[in-house]
Amino acid sequence: MTYFRQFRDESSGACAYLIGCTAGRCAVIIDPQPGQLDLYRGVVAELQLQLEWIVETHDHPRHSGAADELRQGTTARIARSYHAASAVAADRQLRHGDRLQVGDIELETIETPGHTGSCLTFRWEDRLFTGDCLLIGNCGNTDAADASAALLYDSITRRLFAFPDETLIYPAHCDGDRCVGCIGAERRSNPELHGIGRDEFIARRREAGRRQRTQPTQPPNAGAWHVE
Ligand SMILES: [Fe+2]
Image (cartoon, rainbow, N blue to C red; front, side, top):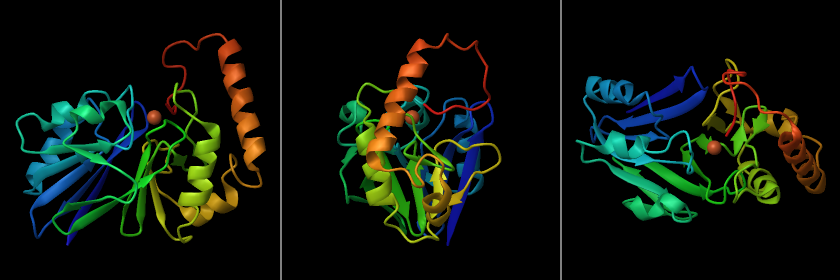
């Protein structure tokens, strides 16, 4: 038996996930958010689990330090992409195809670069934790220095869209009340991707970046939700 929890930070729409194994009394947390660490600790304690692994889908300015802080006072280890700048501080550096075992839970590593050069998606059974690669009705931006619209398009269309329609998507950011999606719906109707070829996707991203650079800076708290 497993436990599964989605934690959403209402101030940012950012999502973290806990998967717990009752047999091994152990748990993994994906993409912990600063400001919610006591919540995670409380749930882990309430479920009588030991936090064994903390994994991150990518280096993220807003998450920075959360994994290290969450680990303090525990025996938990941190796993990140082999390609991430923060990989040197990780206990395990993950590459495409690597599997992380947490009790009976197995997370498969899928490299899905684009939003950043080191983005990972994790698969657990019929669920994909897509980070800021594929979102619900959207996909991650390509603003980071090591971002690539071409790689983002390829990661989504070649790797994630290769999964069956019913595969569930749990992203690192939720749009409104939609906190879970599925591959079939995204393949059929994601407005950023449906009917859009690779060259057009890249051109749109280039134009969006150009517009963003020429627009005045938004005031603080101008939007309740954003993708980083
Ligand atoms: Fe991000």
